[in-house]
Image (cartoon, rainbow, N blue to C red; front, side):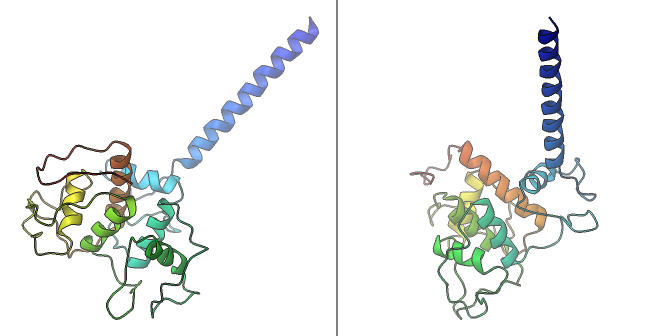
Length: 225
């Protein structure tokens, strides 16, 4: 009798310890930034990436959602989200990216994967701020979405068929990854903020797990890699 009672007590204590451990683990993943309240539309996106260690805040407990993202910072986040091997990489040969550069592995991995490329002068400019146009290409290439046809008419007046980024922006729109800065503009030359990048990434993840059916007659998704 005593033996059975002891086993029951032990089992209850074990379950209690496991439950406490699980709660603690869940709470540790619920990252909170003082400048990202739950009322903000990007709260879930920022919290999701932060809880998985893909983005981080600052020592003062802030995230600075309105701060612009540099090209180097963007490569680190995207490469980590895509779980690319950033150690065993081939040197892309950019003049301004040495093998000792803090973003070397991330940049090299994305170049090798065909996600990004540098400029005509053989530089990458990691310290420059990332534009929404360049981000559209990185997202579409990185997550393996099919590019829209160059001839598809975009509802965004600042994205025309002559623009190199038109297929990427239109693919973002069709896959519900962006709705533009307004219903009729995408603002391709504007810089990407930290909160916008978080939204781009998490929406892309959602689009992959639950792909939408394009409504545009000239756009056909062959596959999503």
